[in-house]
Image 1 (cartoon, rainbow, N blue to C red):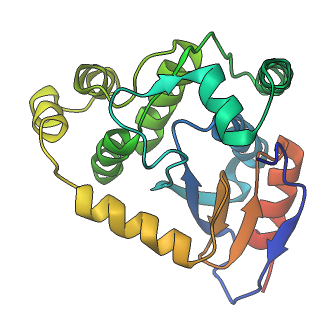
Image 2 (image 1 turned 30 degrees about the horizontal axis):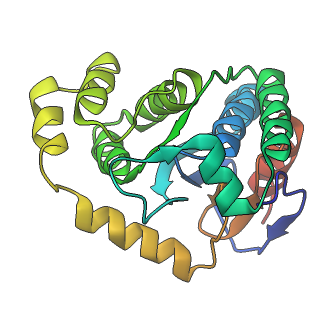
Length: 228
């Protein structure tokens, strides 16, 4: 799995100046997505009021076939990517360093979990205007605290901490609500050619691939905002 995607593909299309719709395609299980989001938010802070951004999150699963029991992290990464324990440790050290550079703290995570239910909860959170807050909370819980983002109790707790209704969150966590919607969005992005995350799609036309540094995100967004 590539660790960094320096290229930016741009397809021009007429747009409203300074107004951007941003789809952040990502997975809670993806450490580079945690880095990418922290970096992207720094870019938005640099842009300030120059550019109006409507940010929403789109689902992608790195481990779609994983069962609810999950898997031990090092063994799973060795098997999936053909790495030795030493190579896994080296990659994790690089990830921690990249995270620290943009203010995201990685903790010890001994397990990999299925994230589909997290995407269902995120779908609802986006409808309620709390998508960014829940995404941050899920990334911190998984990568910082090693918690299971697919566990109903974790999802309900995190939903409550970001201001979502506890009872509604319990109902969603205990059902398959929004499963069809999440599957449809996952299919949509696969058909659009998204095969790695994070992928940032601006105004449904511009693609920024990978966990870019803040200055790269800032430059790309400024370029798009000023395009005709």
